[in-house]
Image (tube, rainbow, N blue to C red; front, side):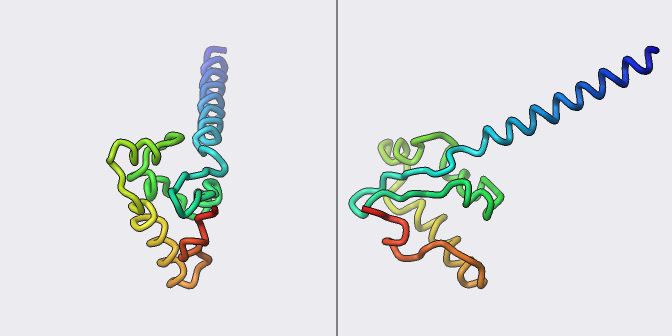
Length: 116
């Protein structure tokens, strides 16, 4: 009887841990789409979930940008992130690398991302 109770409790604990992990994964996806206020060229409407599906490794972007809403604007205001840094070090590099490898890629021209 004790063995059954132990197995039941272990099974319940494992199920709860897996359920919590699944829920946490869904919560940590961030916004589906993000609007980045990007100066005179116009805002960038960034399809966040689409990039998550393609890139897979969050640290590609989030090693430079914290995982919180408005972090780019806050870093710019604090003088910790210069204009075009994100675009040149992350966006354009990835788009160009993917295009050169013959894979689908995002735009390379400014007007491809910036919308007035």
